[in-house]
Length: 241
Image (cartoon, rainbow, N blue to C red):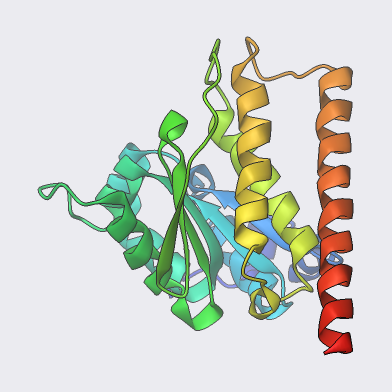
């Protein structure tokens, strides 16, 4: 354990109880942490990840920046192995996390090796390459996903928008467990994450208008509807056979 702080001590220190954290994760499919939460001195992130995992909630994690990776590498590795089911990094952060900065690692290899850290939970590793797409791996099998070129006005928040879209779409593809993941589920989730990130960079700042959010929401609903229709069609074919 990277934490010597028990929930009892944590409650004394902060007033936040184990029951409160458990209640906060009730009915939640995925709880997503940014590495900046590890900089808190009270170890809240560790305790929340531990409690979420016990309650069957999938834990997602983003490494934040190379600076934080270099500062907290060993703690991150422990947390990823112990709790994470979804890991999102950029190429530079992945290289630093695997301590291969002196070697020009292929992002495909980075993605594969990061996925192996989560092998016990059938975890998904995503290595983003900005406008050059991304790699995603589940069960040691990295797949490359290109992205459509857009005119970027401001890249602030693009990574967070991608992660939010990816996780939201993935939740819709799952039945609560990564073991239920279908072969094309990651691709669908990646594409939605990319679509939302592309919309983010096409504006200055990170505040999309209500109209833009509605457009994205309609797009996601339509894709889910089409996905369900295709799934039902395949099931009918199988049943006929």
